Length: 212
Image (cartoon, rainbow, N blue to C red; front, side, top):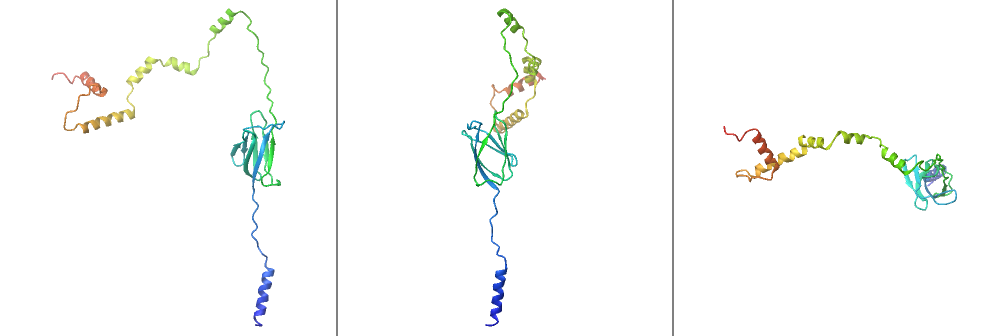
């Protein structure tokens, strides 16, 4: 019994002196952002493009300007809408809540247009009519193409052009199947078959029906 006491004390002292490692959960870098896009007068701006530059992702606010999406710390977010200046925000690790509500105020972008002066026609109606009729529209590339390729030339090219690979394959397979189908018997006369008429005129042109 006296020998067990020093061993027990040694084990007890070892447990007390050893640091106790507890599994501390790591702090998540993901923050769920929720907010609303507003104008200078606190009016909601609908359908604002929300772009996460670091992730190359994008979303948009709804009709009331509300948006919500997850983001990580140090992500750069750009808010963009037509008629408003860009608004940029960097996600910082200083939010008090994990689901913060952030109002995004966007300022109107004023676009200065050049002055346009509209004046009445200086003259009578006849001069206006002559000017309109004498005006010649600029010739485009399409106009040149239509002028160079008239319908007769296109029709001649269509008639003399060889069949496409698809049509040639279909015609060949049809002839091959007809031969197999009518093997051992007389095939019917295809009066309405254009291929038969083409073969007939070709044979007639070559003089195959002349008496030898």
